[in-house]
Length: 121
Image (cartoon, rainbow, N blue to C red; front, side, top):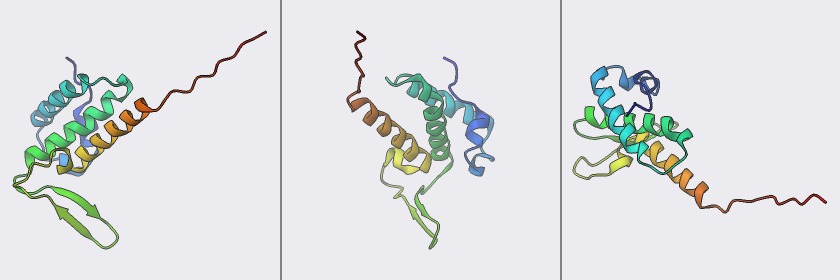
């Protein structure tokens, strides 16, 4: 199965990927590609979902203790995950974005499709 995104596209997401070796990113991309390709969604979303899931996996593979699960800019604030709890996709902002995209796609699929029926006389 071909990879659904590239190392370069994952690196463009943030500077935190600059120090991650290409081999590790490639492995994360392969894992993410396998996961995303098994979803029953429009193929137009494959690359984006793969990119964010690969980024999430790469971040998890480099963080040893706590993951930042929430950041606030105005009054600087950073919230860390509990390293003893498995919080899945919530463990990184990239996993959260992956989950948000999947939820948006599920919502789009569940809305009734409007059809326009015309009869020409």
